Image (cartoon, rainbow, N blue to C red; front, side):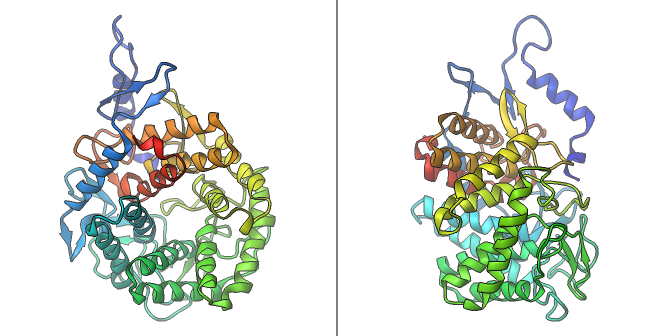
Length: 434
């Protein structure tokens, strides 16, 4: 699990650096990821440099990524240091890393006025990698379906692809929703039909394997053998991106998905959202490197809340109450304080504020604050996003975790599942970027 990367010596060293006045009588500067922390008159954390400048530097740094088999190295590799060198780990998470990466790059492309064709070109390369190098064979229960995990040195991923907590031949159905929805957006942006064709195929495979959900089973298991469909993990928490995929196809006239979409929403509305008021048992399992069936996470409820805040009455007349239920569940069970800032951790089994989850928290909380006109929640959201911004250094190299000693790490936590969150926050509070 992710928390293994923060060993005790690093934690103690970080405390010695981060704790002002910990040694001697004179207070030392408060240092966060190599930056002197900035505070306002009330002690609230300010960005070390404007968001727009920091994000622009990061995107330009990623343009410098070397190519591997025709793809930027961060498309094919999950663990990289700050100089683009792979670490000793060769396991990868292609569907999440590139699915969320496509979403991030398309949102940044729009945000920047579509002025840099390299941004869109990189999104295309992420999509090409998913189509050409990371699909299961054209057979079995999940044919030509995205691999959830793999190895960086495999082109293409083999039939028995599976790393982290996936077994050989296993896929995670919800990751087909993430990548499928991203490919619909990529098709819209590029007008290239091959991306839509794969998205449509993902949805049809998901529809074929969809089951009736209940109190102990989501419509798909968390993991399944792509050959036989044999399930592992009865609850899969991320149903939102399959719902988004169905919605996108219905909007384009593919009415075949209407019954499946209705059944999926019924499970979310009557089973999943109510569980956030109690034990959150329908929000277990999302991250590829964990397989404890009771391990709850913050990523899925936050992304469901984001969906409700975007769609509102068009989807759910009770969107405000439901979004509140989801966000308060996360605030209650997945937040803690660091540097005087309320930050969000991933899951029951990992209490670190990784860049992906903490920026997700800040973005969704900002959207909710705007919708409810809550100044206090807006301040909390902005500070959480300021916290993650400190992970970007002067060269634009991000860290996956503030307290890690050097740039780099998990690429979705450093970059691909981070950028789109700042775009969503800036959409509702554009002044935060200055």
